[in-house]
Image (cartoon, rainbow, N blue to C red; front, side):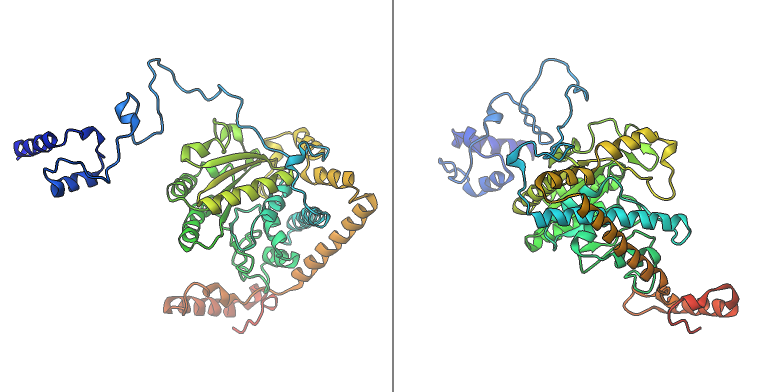
Length: 454
């Protein structure tokens, strides 16, 4: 049989003198059975690529187009690293007028108000946890520009997957302070009915998928959602926020690889704030940050000053355009600094100096940089600052007091929202719970719960 195949191949080659112009795709093999001994090669076949004729690498696993007879290893330190894109310097001055996004005074003022409002809310809820009034909290100190600058450049219908430090994105979209407070207190007005840890926000109304505690799970979910958007051709994209620590998870590799190979319109937004919980970047990776991984996955990447709200806006706006119009993933690495502890379960003074934190707080704070810009433009002054700081704290405290006074959700809600109809085994568990609490009522503050009727 082998000899018969060889003879047939030689017979075909004899009748096709210009065999060098054939296409070597699988369809050609099938076609030869149909063309048989015709003396003219089929018109639809394409000429061989030049690389097949010349002595060039043609391996399907890489894009290399040259050989080397010199033994060399690629070295990680032979270049200065990916540059960091910025628009403003630390004094709020535009460095290149062509990069000025030309946002209106109203827009810029709204950005500033949202950034400072987030900052005020963080201070109140952080102190609330320290007083034992809520169980847990994570601040956003120093990263406000990454939230607001990126959120402002998105379409509000774009789907957002957050990690746990993107409260500003929700505030920008219209999620109220009271909604934030209700979630952290787990009261009756919490959309999750008290079944999530504090700061695990979510909102169907504002297209923000509920935050999950396990690190990195949102990345492959975002790739899947973006693939759905691609098939729907709805003109939207998916935004996925994560920290540089989450980039060390296996889920990050799977997500980036799937998104690239499936051409999904998703923005992978890495907040590189220098530290995972208790772990500096030098102990997380040896390469040039996260943006350097983009080419390895076959996607465009950019590194941006995360303390520059205008740079964040420009990058996200352009990245979104590329993702939607080209149906492709984009990797954004926002370089910033986490001023606060990782969470209320962390003490960052153990692994970094107070002087280091103070430097970033005083010399390169994103709120200060935007305020300098507004003052330079004549859009803001000290009197306006004092008035707004007073007003913003008032808004936060009103929402805080209202949320704290609300009762807790009905405990029966622990068993709902999973199945369309509550199955028998969960009904039995609910009855066991109610029986237990009824028997030991003196140990449970039932008056704090809504509609408890056991």
